Amino acid sequence: MAEKHTFLCVYDYGMGGVWMTINAQSANEIEDKFADVKVVTDRPDWMTDDEYKRIARESAYDIDSPTGWLSSFIYSKQRESEGKWPFMFRGAKNDVTEYRTIWARDLSEVTSQYSGLENLVGVPIPVGDLKNMGTSDIDQPDEFLARYRK
Image (tube, rainbow, N blue to C red; front, top):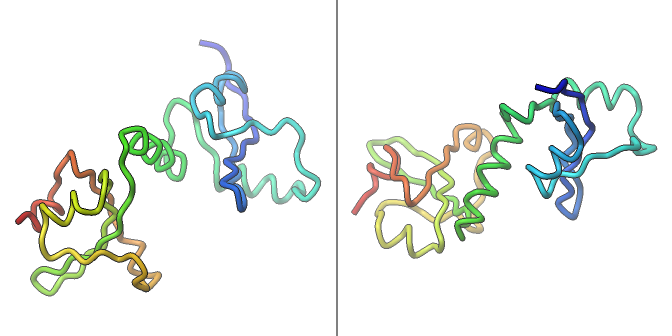
């Protein structure tokens, strides 16, 4: 196996970017695997040495075992390729409030199968509550979805 190198990368989402470093064998390996992530060959003028070190410390990934943000990004892209979109819900059972992102093809796919879930479009959510927000996939029912099945 060829030696890996560290590459500065960015995911530009249109109104900003997510900066990271990715360990891979080549820049092409990164761009082939993650079409929306670009390898940056020249560090931007605004990125100081300290800023680069912070990015390399806090947002470092390996192409063969993605974690954190990169893992979530891959998961999201896979769901989108299946025609699914993230819908945020709040559920309450037995005095426990839960927040969840449910990936589905449309809102009615969730609301027709599950009761007791409140669609959170336009609803303010306390930031602290988002720390415990999990993710479900409509095609892979989990314990959360089982609690709210009609």
